[in-house]
Amino acid sequence: MSVQPDSGRTHFIGIGGIGMSGIARILLARGREISGSDRADSPTVARLRALGAAVHVGSDPRSLPGAAAVVVSTAIRESDPELVEARRLGIPVLHRAAALASVMAGHRAVAVTGTAGKSSTTAMLVAALRGAGVDPSYAIGADLDEPGSNGHEGADDLFIAEADESDGSFLRLSVDLAVVTNIGIDHLDQHGSVEGYQQSFVAFLDRIRPPGVLVVSADDPGTARLAEVARDRVGIVRTFGESASADLRLADIAMAPDGTSYTASVGDQRLPVRLPSVGRHNAHNSAAALLAALELGAAAAGAVAGLASFGGARRRFELKGTAGGVRVYDDYAHHPTKVAAQLQAARVVAGGGRLVVAFQPHLYSRTQAFAAEFGAALALADEVVVLDVYAAREDPVPGVTGALVADAVPLGADHVRYEPDRSAVPGLLASLARPGDLVITMGAGDVTGLGPEVLERLGER
Image (cartoon, rainbow, N blue to C red; front, side):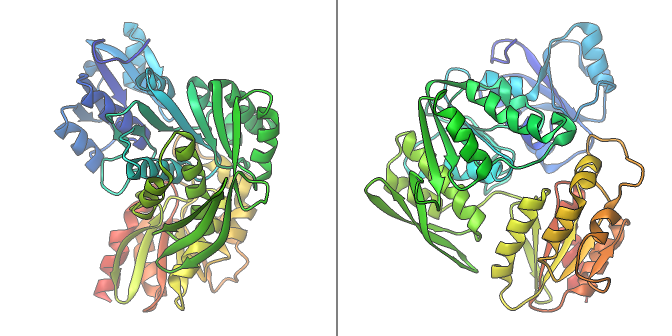
């Protein structure tokens, strides 16, 4: 079953989600009739309506008759009334990844995946290609530098997609080039074990069409092992990193409050790269994007210029505003590795100010598995507020709350607070912050909505 423009109306359950909305945007650009539902109105839903989608708030099974296909993500439960009705009516139901594979068909396909850095690397690859004069189609799990830019129908034959390893759905894609940023430990609730999670990346190698290209980190142990396996299964394996063996080697990495710079050595070229974003992790993400762009035939100078103009992705250390001499940022980090990397970068931006972080754990299973690691990562801040767990697709687990994370932060009781009442967090952050400090709201849940409230409280103060 495909979701091509001539096959009737496609209905998205949870259309406001970042991954779902990007696919819907592309289908709308292709002239497809789109409908959908979501739990609440949002700017994303409003933008889809403006593009011609018929979107309603709340579940309404009456919207299903006449649909040719229904698209769902892993977050949609089998008990959802619209999904139940679709199955009763015999309407084909596609997973989001299957819909993505369908819209990628007929293009030179590129997938970016990995435990951390997927969205940023995908967005940077798009920026590098645009800088080189290429207009790719893309679907990314984050908005780029303007709202609603998580999906785009381009004029050229390239399609760049962020590929989700969390539930193994990236195994539904078929691609010509794949980027794997790193392989850590995550999503044990879906994969069952560390070995199961890591093995999914090995299985992903079979989704690269011959002759195919694989771009991986030479520095990350997980991707280094994957590269060894891939050399007998993929046409070309290319590496990036600070290792002397890397095909694209980063050297002279320098960070300042306004950006990061390094020299990329690839073959006989020495390319000076300058990024507006801060952090060693961003340097590595951009190196992956640059190497992929070069493998796709982009001109080096244009790709480097594209990276220099990259405006960033929303929710990736996004500045929400300044009030009372305090800068307030929002970040999507929801894994210990990501939290640590972003706080290290934020320390550079903060300069002489302190880091005040409000962290919202995401998923009970992840909180239970990584509470100690989250605690160690958050210790890189000066003041820490931990919210309760954002459940997302999971049911509560007895005894698993944000307190597990707060208790694991080794900063002392005077600097760590567990606040399960989300409405109390903006005032608490405003009371903790001093002029010159940097405040970050961090996590993959609704903590993202607190930034404006924090700024309002700071302004009142």
